[in-house]
Length: 162
Image (cartoon, rainbow, N blue to C red; front, side):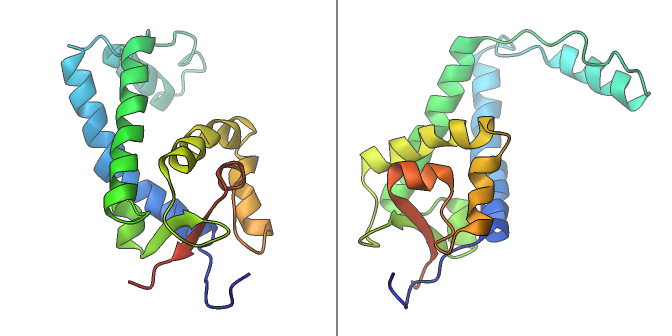
């Protein structure tokens, strides 16, 4: 382990992810929703569920909104593609990571990640999430602050010196 390297912990990574949701995923989601002419998901059902839940109705989630897997796939692929472009152009950082001065690097060399690592890392979010979020909690317990998706892709998230 390089002594000059400072690994990014859970909360700074969480904040960067929140910023990326606001500045990457949300705008992409709006564009995809508009392109789908409302067929991606049933926004009216979401609104009804929220109103029912806010009024204390215990059956608020009995009727789930219909969704289109095709449009969902397009959204997920678009977010992945845009993230990979940022990782390539901003040397391992998305806007959220850039804002908090962290970046994704190869765990052994601390150099820029390649497209295979980027893709593996992105797909690795699925098991990190499906395991009740435990894949993300690894960050809190590992000295190198690597989550499950980092371990799968051979990446680490470190503070950027530039």
